[in-house]
Length: 171
Image (tube, rainbow, N blue to C red; front, side, top):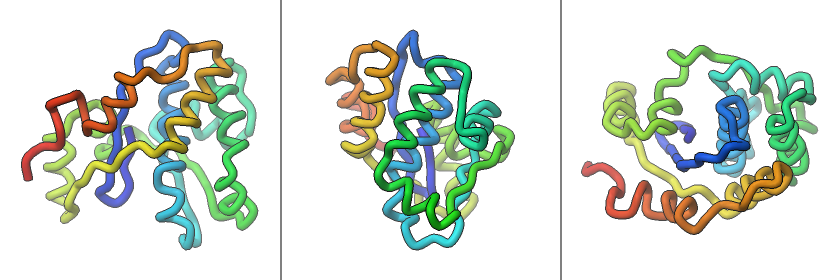
């Protein structure tokens, strides 16, 4: 999951090929895909990622682990990436988990915590769908890892804003 200015998303993925470091980098890249249009006019964009391997991989533009290499290779191929990198506007940094409570709460399904933190910060939290481009990105990463593409159930997890019947919390 991820978050930007009160907009958040989450997706439940459990695959042997997707280790925690791979999932963290995948989530950062999906976050970029989901919110890139909103950030198109920003002067500087900083991807704050609380997994230490992710900013390292993005800074060095290389990875040793196959899963991280797969995510990085697909991230480099994103058509919207060049608009941010050509203008030297996209950066990434490591931030400790305490610096990312909204993204952590979204990714872990801790919706009450996320809404409480958002309210304390004066934000109206709202779930946004995972885009078709983001689903396609994940499928391409899975293909590079010789893993099955996303299932209908995994896609429906997002389209129902959680598990079927769960939906967003009451306002």
